[in-house]
Image 1 (cartoon, rainbow, N blue to C red):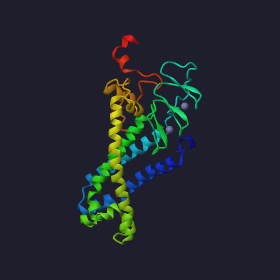
Image 2 (cartoon, rainbow, N blue to C red):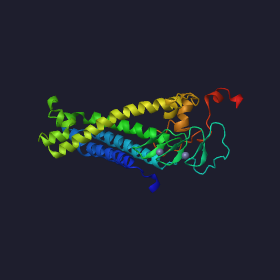
Image 3 (cartoon, rainbow, N blue to C red):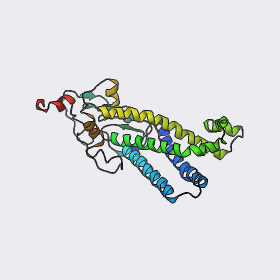
Image 4 (tube, rainbow, N blue to C red):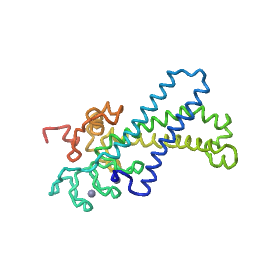
Length: 280
Ligand SMILES: [Zn+2]
Ligand SMILES: [Zn+2]
């Protein structure tokens, strides 16, 4: 269990922010925003209520489930014995004292070589690579959906907090300052703080998700994108399978659906071989 936990101080802080942020927004929606909305629109239809409970549960299970799978999935070569001879495209990793396959890179924080390494994600405290990229992508997708959904739900609640006056927007943007100035009480300050986190995270996730969708679409890792390496682009459908597996279209619904990856993380199909298989 210990090996899955974040290792550096920055990772511990960022991971605590991830878990704390998810649960703070969830609590705000369930115990303050939804009851407030139901109170405003009397009589509130039970269909609408159950829809919100279902959507929230779905997004929560997928967020936490994908976060869990991102962390516990082994991103290294595992029990596969790496060859002692340096094959073409391979490199020697002096830290691991082993030959490392193409697209694999050493992570100084995780202290091991990660297959098809994308980046070290400080918010999950782990590296993102060949085997957990699916879970990472669906974690940020569900987190983004949840934050946008929460922001839409929060609009009326925010309007109420700022006293239906745009000039009191500081109550939302600078809640601590507004509390010190006795413009709001301490509970409203906490709610404003969580509302602001939700807006900020939503903006950040829009950029992050857009960037990674581009990578998946083109069959690139972050390193390959920055170095203009395009040799693994097999077309959008094969690229999707390379990240989400053969049942890529089902992975959105649950992190617990098995979807086998077509490759082993060590040998990768290149676009040149894919287009003219007779040369293999
Ligand atoms: Zn290494
Ligand atoms: Zn790492």
